Length: 327
Image (cartoon, rainbow, N blue to C red):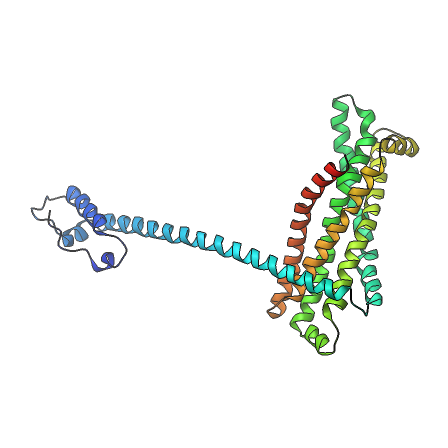
């Protein structure tokens, strides 16, 4: 077999000599007239289809190599970006703490944000809590009836709502509303240079904008959790009564007779951490937005996504700590 040279578009890094040797050998075996001397030119003339498949295979292998390298590069870049973001958030918290504990204190802005983020979230939280109570009661009742434990339904509903469903549903609902609002508002102020104008006017934006919103989020979440718990338990009784009549007094008595403060207080107060996460993440994303209106959109979206994600991760840790510290 005579192989003079590979075509230039193959020798330019697409394949090595072994690929070209295999290609010519396959073409020689499949040649219709059995030529005495087989050259690279005859291979290209006789079997262009075979060449096309060979080049496609080489291109696929090359693309796979590039993609694998790109994936590794992307993973590394994402890891670097995560630690960079985490470090910037830590620095942001340091500036925030220093500004929050130095006068003057922005009480008027704090009460305004408490009303904006707290009282205006009550209808949404009440609806979410009521829906949770109905769904939890209906699904749990069906399971308990199968095992002949229908009498435990009030206790199961109360414990489920107070210990876990109420706090986490409230936090996720508020994160969808408050985080998006804070993130978009501060981002709009950032891209329009209003925050820079504040600093030029000797107003500390960390104290006036961030500290007030974060503190409002922290204090209003436990109160909203109580609202969610109330409507969840009440609508649980309504759903149970629709299936099998039971008095509200008996439902409350059976549900709360085994509940202690160790069941109620830690689960409710952990929402302080959820509020802290919502406020810090939303304020950081908003005050560091760039890119005009697109930056405002990114800040609002990332605030909701990151706040919800960190709430779920924090809940995993807090539930374990509560079980250890309050057995």
